[in-house]
Length: 569
Ligand code: DON
Image (cartoon, rainbow, N blue to C red):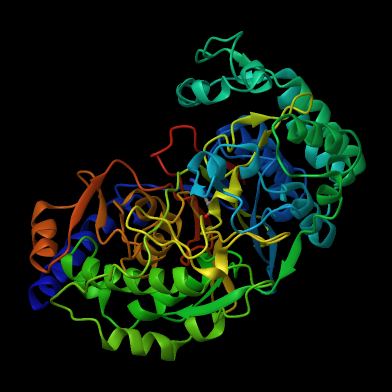
C-alpha cells in the first residue's frame, strides 16, 4: 500500500505539471463533451439531438426525457420502446427527488408455474413465447412523470418521434449489424420481418428505415395520452396478437395497468447523497449496499485497476448479490424484503467484518445461480439549465424483446416475464433461481436490475448515471461512481475505464478483455478468484457537474458506436 501511495503522489506531481502546461481541461486523455446549460446522453445520436432540441425550446429535463424516450423507441429499436418498461429517477434543482416505476406487470392469468410444459421447465415459454410478454409500462410511466413535472405540451414532445417513424431515418452500421443478427428471430413473425427487414433482406447502412404503423400508434398516444395505448385501437391490436400467439394479455390487463410513483432509495457515499431506484428494481438497494461496504476501505489509495481494490469490490458484490437473490422482489407482493436494513451502514459494517483482504470468499452452491440475461436495455441521462436531472433506464429485456412486432401497431413487445424466477423451489447449477420473492403472480412486477442513479453533494447536483446490461448494470453503475468519486476520473474516463463483474454465482470475476494488467489478474488469481474474460460489460451514460466552473461534462460510452450527446449551450 505504501508503494501504491508513493506511485500515486509521483503521478499526481507529473499530472500537475502537465496540467499547468496544458490547462485543466486538457489534462485527461479522455476528454468529456461539455455544455454550459444542458446535456442529453443516450444510445442514439438522433435521439440525443431530439432531447437537446426540447431543452433548446425551453423544455425542462422531464420534457426532454419524454421526447428522448419516444425518439429512442424509433431510432434504437433494440431497447428503446413503448412495448416495454423501466424506471425514472428525477431530482429537481431544489433537491426534491422522485422515482417513477413503469415496470411491466404479469397478466391476471399468470402463475408461478406457467413456464412448465408437461411438468418440465421450458426456456422457450419463459423467454421466447407470447407468454413471455408483460403488460408494457413505458407510456403510462412517461405520462405520469410528465403530468407531475413537465412544462411543454405532451403532444409536442412526441412529434419528433412521430416524424422519425413516418419519414424514416438512415440505418447506422451498428443498427444494420444488430438487425441482421436478429432476423432469424423476426422470421417467425411476419409483422416483425416486414418492419425490420428490407423485403426479407437485412437493411444496409445508410438505407432509410420507415415505421409507418409505429408512427400511427405514436400519433394516437400524442393525441389521447396513455388511453391511446392502453385502450382503443392499440390495445385491440395487442390483444389480437396475444390471441394469435396464445398469450395471456387481455384488454382488461391493459386498461388496468398503473405506473407508480415510489419513494427513492437514498444512501450516502463519502459525503455524496446517492438517489436511486427502490424495488421492484434491485438496482438501488444493491448499489447502496456495495457502496456502504466500500466506504470502509481506502480504495482511492489502492488505485483504479489494483488487485486490492478489485478484490474488495468483488467481495462487496458477492455479498450484495446473494442478498438480492434471497430477499428482493415486487414490494407490493413480497413483504419479506428488508430494504432499509440491507441499505443501512450497520449492515455493511457487519458484512465488511467478514471480508478477508488477502483471500477470496466462496459462494456456496446451495445458494443461488442466476438465469441467463441479455444485455439489451438502454439508458438516458439528462440535465437541464436549472440543474433538474433525469436518470431513466428502460428495456424490452432481450434485444428487440420477444421479437414480436404487434401487427398494425408497429412496436415490439417485451419478453420481460423472463425476469421472473423460472420454477418454484428449483434452484440449480445451470442457473435457475426458485426463491419466493420473485415468482410470477397475477399483476406482479418482475424483479429488475436497472439502476438509474443521481448523486448530489451539499444540496447541489453532482452526477447522473445509469447503464444497460442485465445484472451487470448494478456493477457498471457502482464502478462508474467509484471511478469519479474515489479515483477522480472525469466523466469520459470513468465511462471508458475497463469494468469487472461478480454476481455471487457463477463464482467468477468477469473482466473486460485486455482491460486489466496481467499482473493485477495474477494477483487476483493468487487470492483465490476465478477469472473469466468477456468482450464488453454494459455501457454507461454519465453526466458529471464540474465543481470548478459548474459546467456539465458527458461521458459517452464508445462500446456502442451509435451513442451520442445532445448539448444546450
Ligand atoms: O430489468 C432487468 O434487469 C433486465 N430485464 C434488464 C435487461 C437488460 O439489461 C438487457 N440489456 N442490456
